[in-house]
Amino acid sequence: MQISKAHLALKIQNVNRKTCCNTQNEKRNETFLDFLDYIQMKILANDGISKTGQEALEKAGIEVITTKVAQEQLINFVNAHQIDVILVRSATTVRKEVIDSCPSVKIIGRGGVGMDNIDVDYARSKGIQVINTPAASSASVAELVFAHLFNGVRFLYDANRNMPLDGDTKFNELKKSYAKGTELRGKTLGIIGIGKIGQEVAKIALGCGMNVIACDLLIKNVSVKVELYNGQGIEVSIDTIPFEDVLKNSDFITLHIPKQKEYIIGKKEIALMKKGTAIINASRGGIVDEVALVEALDENHLSFAGLDTFENEPVPAIKVLMNPKISLTPHIGAATEEAQDRIGLELANQIIALTKN
Ligand SMILES: NC(=O)c1ccc[n+]([C@@H]2O[C@H](COP(=O)([O-])OP(=O)(O)OC[C@H]3O[C@@H](n4cnc5c(N)ncnc54)[C@H](O)[C@@H]3O)[C@@H](O)[C@H]2O)c1
Image (cartoon, rainbow, N blue to C red):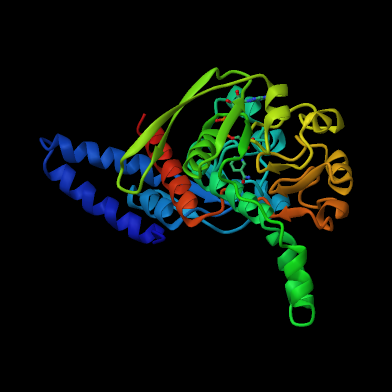
């Protein structure tokens, strides 16, 4: 619900009347002061916000504007509406120029994990709070990894391309060409980066009967709980091993690390992998050298790849898009109803808490 200015003015008058009539009523005065604080706040959720997040903010008296403002109009819009909080996902960028030109902004929020689209250090140096929702989408990204893995071992990425074209005329030929599927159960999944998403991936893998090995720059050991629907579960301890050992010993490799300065997986690393290994990248583009990846797929050294993130987003290389051994999604790891609800609510709660401080 959008609260109109007239509606707010009326509320202030009502609260004001009540608090003035009873100066002893400290509780109400406090509420009134809180209320005054809130109504001064305006949020521009430029890349959208979940209904639950918006409702939580509006319930706290904060105005949420969900108009999608074009990047080049952002500064004008923020200044014209005296926006206090800019919320973005990955589409809108909040760089130094926006920060310098919009003195009303006190909080910048990123619905999601990576903050590559925000000049975080610069904003913080100007006293602006920068917040994100680090854990809210982990389970959704992990499920997408498995969507690519299950897809890959049964060639669905290719069958879905060919069935509409030839399914009615070459059914038996297609049946034959996809006949050599494999199971995930009993295979080894190598996780590069066993942070929040890596651990969610490990839980699903263990639940599927896979062996899990992992490496991490900082983490030496994690204990993950494989949970049943009824809350029962089993704790599994995973010691990390060297990066090269993960490369050499995995049937499938999935990456869950932040953006790096250089490729983590290039020609040299792929050469260390067993023939037939598959790679999933739902972390960040630029971590896997796409030229080396396509080459290894074409030479049958790798069996398939699943990519949710690309070196050149939002215009991925045609060679990647057209490769018949790559399962493709357009950076949708966090794009589930559940993750967006958690992201919206987490942002709302953080903003409300910051406003109270
Ligand atoms: N596909 C999507 O839509 C989507 C959604 C959310 C997050 N992500 C991305 O997923 C990635 C992981 O997110 P997270 O929440 O698990 O982060 P996290 O910080 O919880 O975990 C990352 C882990 O990677 C480790 N690490 C960093 N560099 C490494 C390296 N070179 N080798 C080995 N380990 C390394 C860190 O020590 C850390 O434990 C981020 O890049 C994030 O942007 C993608």
